[in-house]
Every structure is written in C-alpha cells, then in structure tokens.
Length: 161
Image (tube, rainbow, N blue to C red; front, side, top):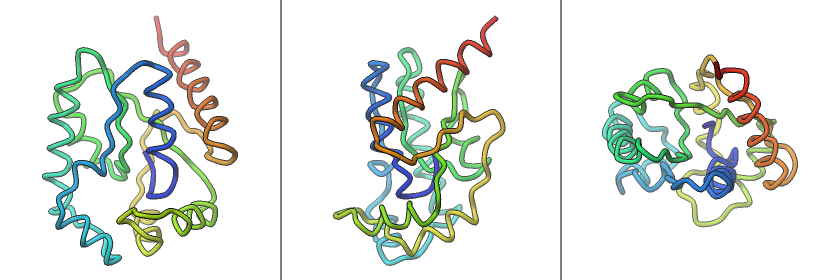
C-alpha cells in the first residue's frame, strides 16, 4: 500500500510470484469514470472510492482460501476496513519513499491514468496503519522486493506462537 507511483504494482507482482499467490491490482477495479477523474488530476472522494473498495473486498474474499497479493493505495483506515471486511489474516506492507523520488517515477511512467497532480492529496490523506510492515522503495525493484519479503518473513516469525 502507498500513494501512486510508490511501486505497489511492481513490488506486488514480485511478492506474488515469490509466494506463488495470485496478484490483484487495484487499478483494474476502478470504473472508467474514476480513471477519467484521476487522469484529469482530481482526487477521488470517499463516495467515488466505496464501490471500488467493495469490488476489491469481494475479490479478496474469493481468494481467501489461498491468499492473494493486492496492490492498492488503501490510504485511510476506512478504506482498509472496507477492504478487509469478512477477512482474516490480512497484512499490510507500507511502501515508503522520498516524495520527490515518487514524483519523478510518476513523471516517467507512460500510459497510467494517475499523474503527479494526485500525489499531494494522496500524501495528505495517508493514514499509515498500525502494525504494517514498512519497506523503503529506494533502490531497484528487485532489491525492494527482497527487502519486503525479508521483512514479511521476519514479521511472520515475530507474530507466530
């Protein structure tokens, strides 16, 4: 989880492959209207987000038996509550990084509906979850994914009985 451009999809795909889990990208669950709004630089409202969050929750529940990796901003406690309704064992990986590095990444990607105009509102909205595994996104995607896997493994060991 984190703001646009933090590497959620890139790292999420690597984590899913390493753990042999299905990969889900929150971008695939947005309506065309929401994508157009974000492309225009307007942040989504809670009303805009609600059906999107519910669609992802339904998909996560469909994968509950096997697990899945979801790349999603999940910026607020409310969003995370809707995403995880009816689920057990959900873990959050918070990708952190220098906002200027993230802004540069957004500026250099092509074909994505979310541009740099959304970054300030997303950073202002972010409510980091208590208990999240936190990994900085500096370095290569492979190095970041390796750090994320190690941090998740360490977290598994510290929370197991």
